Amino acid sequence: MRPVDLARLRSFVRHVDDFPSKGVRFLDVTHVISNPELFAFIIDALARPFLERGVTHVMALEARGFYFAGAVALRLQAGLVPVRKPGKLPPRTINAKGFIADGDGIIQSSDALKSGFNTYQKPYEFELAEGVLRSGSRIVVVDDLLAKGGSIDSCRKLVAKTEAEIVGAAVVIELSALGGRANLTGIEITSIIEY
Image 1 (cartoon, rainbow, N blue to C red):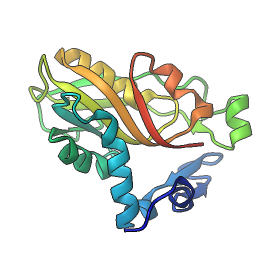
Image 2: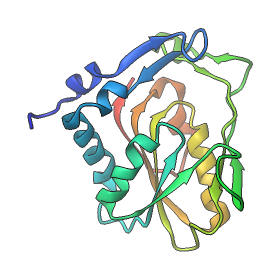
Image 3: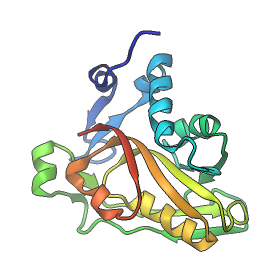
Image 4: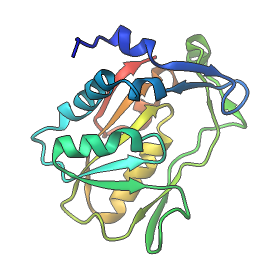
């Protein structure tokens, strides 16, 4: 296996303009995960900060968090907990809503405009199967991307309802101009690529 550097990893991230809506640039990781060397590098980088930290479960955020979370859970010798959009898990579930970005449609800040990345308003509502987490569970949240932080905020609220503890969150891509890290104070964030 040849060494992986961040420039090579970035070159496999496809930028798709005006998807899923006009004015939004979608970062597609399909080519990254189809490359065994890059995929292995990502899993190692996401798991490494949480080795020997007593992690009991990895939360996989629907949908692209599923790409990475199972492999991270195996690396951490932890269980896997899918976090789904409402109505996708059989009853009984716990539900939580994260904050929603302000404004209508595309959210733009001066930093976001300079970076070329915007995000769009969407609900950050997720469900967790009741009883899979309990007091004493130690959680790492895994997703593909951190923008404004709404999805991880939903997970924080779900975990709080179970009296478990978030050890941290790991994402492949962080859109730092959108301020997600600042919106998630108190959560240790690991990211591999920053835009």
